[in-house]
Length: 83
Image 1: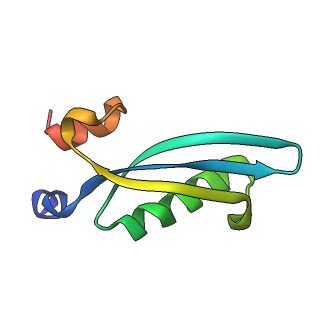
Image 2 (image 1 turned 90 degrees about the vertical axis):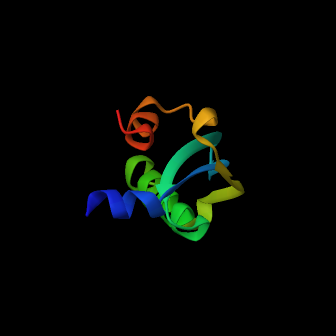
């Protein structure tokens, strides 16, 4: 059952910027998701909870699907490659 769900997942790289009042910080996250919209929602949830950032303080500039060779996150690479 897990293999069937994993076959639908794609890897997305989401880039953007956190705009807090005294701080602007660029970020890049690699996310496993079915669609790019789901990846964006996951980024809002993760960054919002870890950095206490509201959605209006996050500006997402790019969402792109990436291939297995382009994955930089070692945990996601292991999950996708099946090691």
